[in-house]
Length: 205
Image (cartoon, rainbow, N blue to C red; front, top):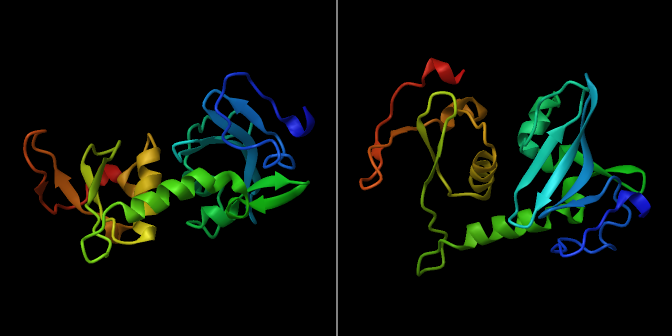
């Protein structure tokens, strides 16, 4: 079909054909939609990839910056970092898709619809009786040092950082700024996490 749009019978429609009409490289695969994406570095040029959008809000990118690149299932934030983008940590603006022949930031497309819905639900799901946000802390295990890392969920930015880490199968402590490191020791499934600040393991660098 036009613009690379491919459809398979029996699949849940994440986006209408009209919403994706002008987007380049669109393909419906299983429970997700794939589109061509990229991120531009002033030093290295364009790094191109394939963005997968899932109904649960997850976003995954397979990098195609070079024929031999093995980077797969990257979060948009990790893809932005991998591309060598100088002003990182603004992936919604820096990662783009091609719409009508032009590079358009993800934040200006419909592709973040489910991601934003999940983020909004997370921000409003923990509220106290006075209406204020009352988030509980969440934990993600570092794939390098195997320590549990605590994530504070007090602001939208902190919720976004946790969401990106949760979606990254190869997440490491070094993906966070040093001032956000708080190590926890996991005792058992039947006990609480022992809150113990310890020095950052060298294996995380």
